[in-house]
Image 1 (spheres, helix red, strand yellow):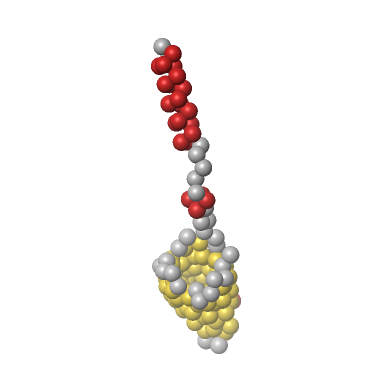
Image 2 (cartoon, one colour):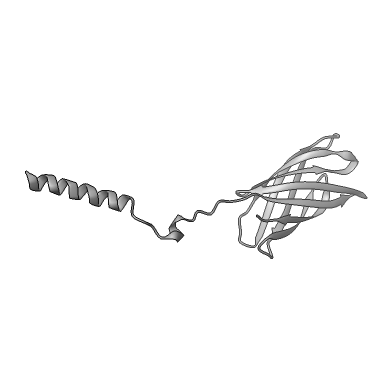
Length: 133
């Protein structure tokens, strides 16, 4: 009986030691994705257009001001590639502009920033400059 009791205690101790055993540090590091904001300046039909946006987990949102003061928002879908991220999007703008489509590409030449170029049917061609956290 003593042997059975001691065997159960040893089994429990081994189980708990395996459960609480130290793990290598690299196994404990979890990469948490961070949003990547950008600003955009462009033009269409002689009007200067502006936008701000952010990308998170392959999706993006861009709030922009287009020609004739049209204000709107675009929802973007990015293709997650290492250096080049092409995107397409659909948005809605005021001032009788209705729906807009957009597309472009963002390039990550550095570790802390990215640049991009795109087209929006309401805001025209634009350039982008963003930061990575």
